[in-house]
Length: 517
Image 1 (cartoon, helix red, strand yellow):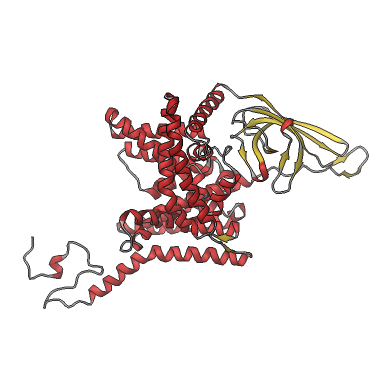
Image 2: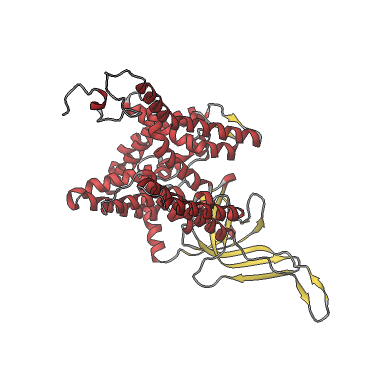
């Protein structure tokens, strides 16, 4: 489905032709006797269906109404009159997600437009989007604008610009908060505000970073802190994902398991994960993690546990039709690539490092290398540089981040119940903050490998992907080499050599002179 979706609507014809060829191949293989041809036939048909489905979603996502034709004057027979260019002058709508800090000190407000005012040379117009269907989206930017939560009704007046992405720029005084949404939206705002206040009590310097790590709120994060994470190649640490949900899931399962059993406890953990996403906001990586938690919990409840790659693929299949435009975002791509790297490349890097590092360091290093190897080709081609220090920084920061999240949740709850405990919790929070920022600043000081041109970016991306492929293939290569060596061994007279690869359980074929067990 990814192969059919990501190349875009222009790939519809080749994708359709490939789907037909694969379906025909599957039909032909299905007629052969034996289990292996039937399995290959199912795989070919499944890939054909995936290509067709992905191309269809890409076609629907890219489809848009054609531009209106120029209006002709039928009474006079004059030539069509050119349309007056109109641009947004003001907008009114509800925020589809929470406001977030943007580059240059701006704050971004994603509006789901209900009313839109247009103006041009000697002309003006007003558009309305009634009903509950999908409305047009517009990005509102304001320097040092107020923090507003999702669901709020906002009216803003400003100037429209297409430089760096179409957006309506407004002054903070020109942004009017009409209401804070319905009861559910107001309840979410209260819960979100209470969580932020609880985290603010447990530290002075660490308050902004604690809110970013646990709630995904970067409003109180200092610009130099965010820049240090970015320069160190560790921006993913600030994105809510499975690492954050794992802390909540462990707490929920440990508390519920003695009461309702392990299976229902996992479903309770999945419910808590959904509640956490509702409070923090459904970002791409967090939504992917919640989907995987729910799919894994449901599969376990049905006595059909699945591996990582299967759960990740099911989450992808669910997300792409629901939000095609979001699936084309960089954060979505990086989130899925990182988890794919952990599932597919993690065991290979662990095998590669098996004899060189102790188990604790080996697993941490393998996870960092696998995730970086998966996302680095995309990062190199997108941003034009490679940051090798990010691997070591991720390894060093992982335990500190996990400890900060455990400490933040536990001490935040304690200080909410007992405010007098805040002075005792603050030094520990600030110490963890100092350690994490020291790691980020050290990694940020390491020079990056610049890739100034498009060919250099493409070459670096291919090189990183090729190295990852070699690491992935190494266990297979060693296994085949060992099989060839074992086939050259000498055996007792009349004994047959074992099958290539020396499968376990065939000791009688190797040493027939011993009695069977």
